[in-house]
Length: 145
Length: 145
DNA sequence: CAGCATCCGACATGATACTG
DNA sequence: CAGTATCATGTCGGATGCTG
Image 1 (cartoon, each protein chain N blue to C red):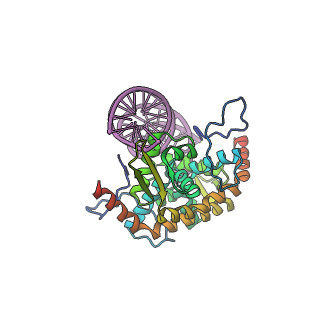
Image 2: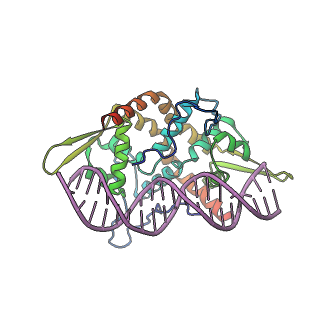
Image 3: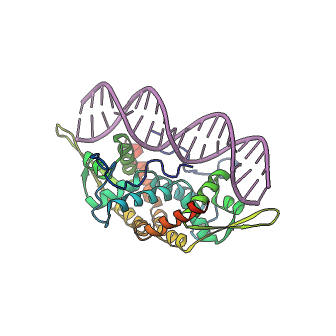
């Protein structure tokens, strides 16, 4: 499972090659390494399901696999598994396997995961607030050209 | 340009088929239509470059195309164009074309775009704060299995 | 039930060449 | 300079079948 195809953290510049990519967000106290990591985290959070899963676990607390799948809505089993593994790896979610005979696995946000969910909250609120505005902007744009 | 491959807003249940996908984020005041739209906005914001471009414009103010491309770092011209068009369509960015002979096009966040940037700020801060924590969680996870 | 392996198509993205 | 058009490719993600 390729966990990050092109966002591997560059430990050191190694040879003379320039650091792949770089930007100039002067606002944040970014060392070059930080910058790369920041972008990686964003890319991670930004995939199709991660945000949704986080939100779901945040709202509903501990959930087992199937329940989670239903709640998120539209995730395939494969993608949910992958997403959860990534979250687990990043320390955002705990995976609790019960050794019962129909297996049961519970997922729950860690405090770190909860803090991330909170940080994302602003985004959700924005989307909710500006639903209509964006919809209208699109109509405008599409009609004009 | 397929703007949303599978996130079309389900107007009504139509026939007996269940509404494609749905989740149960009880926390937000979601009508079914809102829910779909929320997810669409997220998917939009969540692509590889949108967040980066937003941040860039937020920090640097009005910028022309090439400057923006350098600042974001790593975007191809094609992807930057596409990203900017989407942002423009959603009313998040204005596109100012100067009719000079080396063409000059300035991009700037709209107030709406700025408000989105602000909403995203929490995410940036989280990433910055928890850089080390996540890195260590990954080392742990990777070493154990 | 949870999850892994595989096949496969659709799309995203990069590279390149061309235009006003 | 700021795009558009085209081509190549890798990844994402869904469907399916299998396992403990």
